[in-house]
Length: 110
Length: 112
Image 1: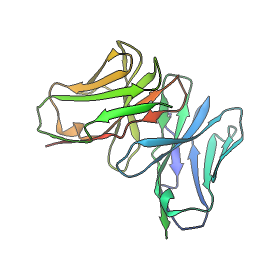
Image 2 (image 1 turned 180 degrees about the horizontal axis):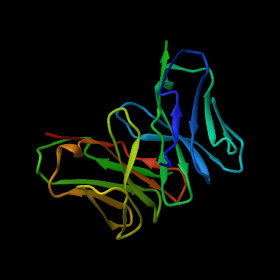
Image 3 (image 1 turned 180 degrees about the vertical axis):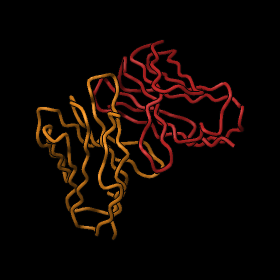
Image 4 (image 1 turned 45 degrees about the vertical axis):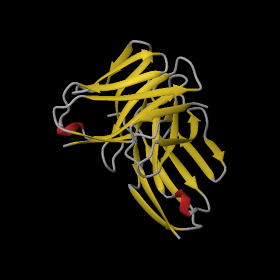
């Protein structure tokens, strides 16, 4: 299966702490994307990082990509209660579709 | 930016009944369109995708079908629903292959 795998499956941290989620995949990619999903809602795109990039930032989000290890990480700094959601990585293998991982469920404790 | 309209939000249907879920897209032309299904607490399974009018690719054999009668309209259908068709259905759109997806708000389908 080409599906990415997020790690950990679930994560609980105190508000204000940093949260780190990881994604691993098995074959070469064109790009990797991170999405957030609030319970019972559609997914929202966060960041796209291309295979020739190593790091990208967007506000409190930082994404890294290591193509040699076939892995990516999403760091959320200074977490807030509103960051509570599920986070998914999605990989573009060069066909017409993205393949999603199984997600990390993040809970921010006030 | 694209806006995805998907309805209804919730649907309860008896086994053996037909299904029609509609998705429309605003803000782009000739998008790639996708139907995903998500089981409770799980990841997304791609069901169908379309790169143009009348062009449908199916990812998994199943009881469902999809159609794209217009550029920005994508329909998910079934002639007879099964219990296993229950789930959270999401329509998505992208401007081009591999680019970011815009998602609708989803339909929670319960087949009883």
